[in-house]
Length: 442
Ligand SMILES: [Zn+2]
Image 1 (cartoon, rainbow, N blue to C red):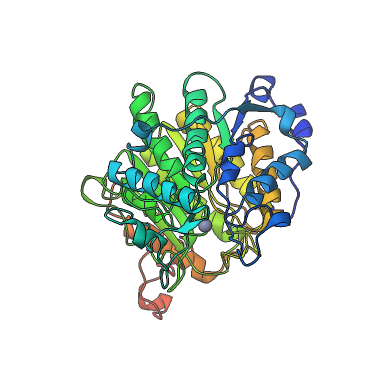
Image 2: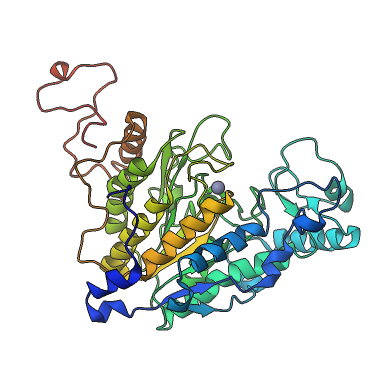
């Protein structure tokens, strides 16, 4: 990996590649859905009502994504899909009927009041009356709902479903959905962390249900800086959906979940993988986590489809995270994922937007990802490690902790490692000449 270099133009890449790979289509969905902009807390900034305030999850995020693809000159190369509206039956693959009914009732309340309402802390709506919904909650509210929010969320999920249909019926094998509101914090009975419906989770279950002859196992890779606790909850007992998240983890950082020791439950034990990174992790750490955890896990799991919860709030300067990633690394990870999908699942790779709240940076990230999807495949190994890669010791330890947590679970993430478990502070000669520090090689 060479994070300092800007990626090559698509045309140059195409000229160096095999013609048969150069014409694979890349789908994009969600960008033309005005209805997704109806989920709006502050309204049009030029007409904002006095005292109404702003929210990080606002319509300008989608405009930033569109601007990034426009600035990159990439639109004419993409196959544009219309995001459809996800039905109750499709959403109920991941969410309880009671919770969906609660969201509908809350939407009616917001419409009657003609103002956004805050969902309760934790996002659980079951059993709440109008008084609770319209009352002032003391603390912990982060997710708003307007009259148009639920329809926006249905189309955000629908954008992913449109990609799944395109991918599995012989169209574009890879694609990107510009979903908002985001989804990975929404659980079976909760809408929280700016998320109403879990777009990527619904897409995973839909793919397995609608196309069982093609899709038995789905890998969900979440690179948003926040742990996707909603996705984890939905699939924690499901051995056919591997949820792998790389995120910032420290006391007090939302959502306070996603430790390496959270590895799934029951039949799903071993199919939840968390890399709990320290604050300030950057490109090299993200790449190493992919190389040391995502790559072996994916190869052992053998997915039929790879979905990505693509949040861009690990970008340096994002107001919602402390990480220091650059736009370039998201393009590089996407290129490597494309290779991985080529090797494992006929190139099936679909990404859905999650977080990312610095508009200018979000535009650059989406441009890099779209460019990477369009680039022809190179004849390379995915997530190859370059010698000059330097990562923080704390991040190396975090990666090792994840592999250690899965050493005897189905993915056996320490298998093949030369490392030995060495107690902290103990010198090499205390444990024998062949042993290494836990983080030195792992
Ligand atoms: Zn996030």
